[in-house]
Image 1 (cartoon, rainbow, N blue to C red):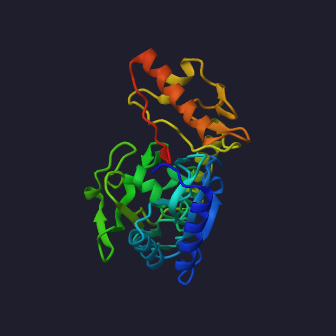
Image 2 (image 1 turned 90 degrees about the vertical axis):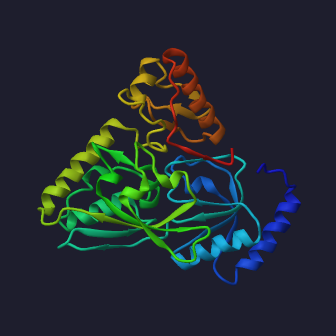
Image 3 (image 1 turned 45 degrees about the horizontal axis):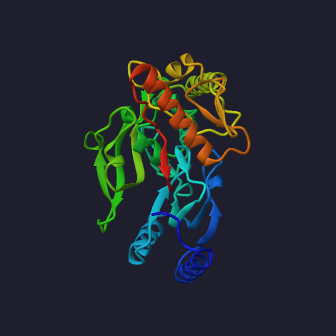
Length: 314
């Protein structure tokens, strides 16, 4: 839906909705979403709520549906490009939906959808559990990582995921889906095509390993990422999916596009599959740069690069 309301109409509508919802939980209005994305871009959310548990999440979704207003789920914002005009309706952030249970003996780990991936990787390493070392440098939350089947260093979420607890728009109670039901592929899953909201995930890791060795492997993997990727500037991680067996970064680099800028958005000089914000980039700058890369690669190789990034509000 286009943002066509007048400022007065939007303000009155927002104030009314805030009054209706405030009795249940805190809700903020016109919050800049740039602070909710790793790119540090994006306009304001008309309404924003941060669910901390399943009950709050369900109530917020039901509220938005009753009011027939648009709504969307965001996590750590590590894979999002939000329009400069912002988002209408209710934005529900799950980054506070955190917590994990780790069983050192069985190797089973249950983590909430808002749990940070690097944080979980460190926790299981301390417990002597092997299997998530590859994930230490991936920005984002468990929920987002499962949705995208995030991966690095030769590993991916699907390798160690046992099952997830989800809720749908129609289900009265959460239910569990197992690995084989999630249709995992390269940076894809069933969740991307259906209205499934991840509440938590259960991983099956290998118990009984030396925690010092696993922590050392974590550090090695993290240092490699820090040396080869531009973590000193805001980005979303890899922008494009690799058109296997080719690598998106190599295709972009070979076209001489490293360092190409639109506004304050730049194709990283360190890694061509990263677009960085040099300080005051706009979402529109990043979007134009993404489209420029797609155009250049398609003209040179008759190959369309598909972004990993999810656009909201465009």
